[in-house]
Amino acid sequence: EGSICFLSMERVIATIFTYEIFHQLKYEKGYTRSFQFYIDILAILPFWVGFFIPPEHLGLIRTLRVLRLFKLFWTCECFSILIETFRKAWPMLKSAGLATIAVLLFGSAILYQLEPENFQSIGNTLYFCFTTASTVGFGDFSPKTPMGKVVTVCILYGPALLVCGAIVGIVSAAYQVSAEEFHKRRTKQIL
Image (cartoon, rainbow, N blue to C red; front, top):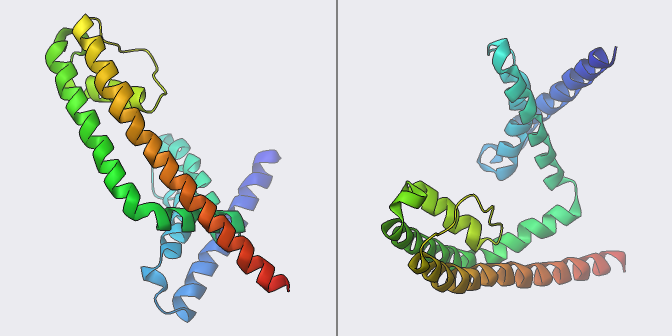
């Protein structure tokens, strides 16, 4: 009984979202070029694709229903602040992201040259560098030689963490500005 109820709700929601897309296509110019169009397509795509794939792949497709949460971007004010934050921070994030990638690629290349038998592939050194620089550090890979440890400290803990910290700082500053602007607009609307 529970699965029948869920399936019925699924069909109703997919029908409503599909109708909404056709309505927007008919009455809103430029809709297909908007970010909202792609979010709306992602919201219904798992439902409609489910009719055309083999049953053994249905579990993966059904998992993609979570993409419907992206529709919250258009209804929740807090998501509007986040979108505005990343829009404002994007010019600075591009340069900080490029610097991060350059440092991590450099560190990966050096570590792989120092310890090829330990890391076994450049992909493993990239994985190690990204998890270490992001401070996640799973510990499944680590340098074994003293020189590998020195490189890790000098390249990953130093510059990479500074650049990652800069990225966090850029986003935090942009979020503060976006939140203040949002509260000012909201206060004006109330008055």
